[in-house]
Image 1 (spheres, rainbow, N blue to C red):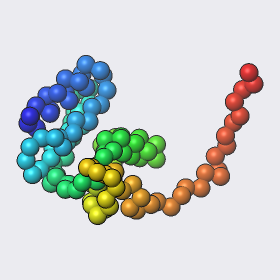
Image 2 (cartoon, rainbow, N blue to C red):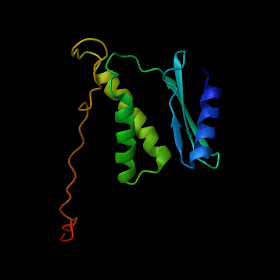
Image 3 (cartoon, rainbow, N blue to C red):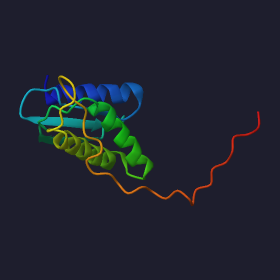
Image 4 (spheres, helix red, strand yellow):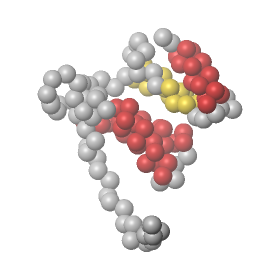
Length: 131
């Protein structure tokens, strides 16, 4: 119910499962949101930001986690990946504000700012071993 509760929960989970935990504060009350990333050793990062208004919020959690994973695959450190992914999701919500699909909350606008495709021709892919 508060940013302090969020921090305590993230710290407990990080220690219990020996992994970094990103606790999102989007469901807390107020005009600002606080999100926290806590490592098992207790190191943490917090982001406080104005609530992103919009009705195109369906899929925000899946989009955030996928964006974090994609950015880490591109070499970003976890805290930087979280920052960039949060920025992406906020813009995807904002840019989808005028898109009406069905009833209720619509999806985030994933395609608001597409990146140039990456050339993977330098990669060598091995065939799977024979069965």
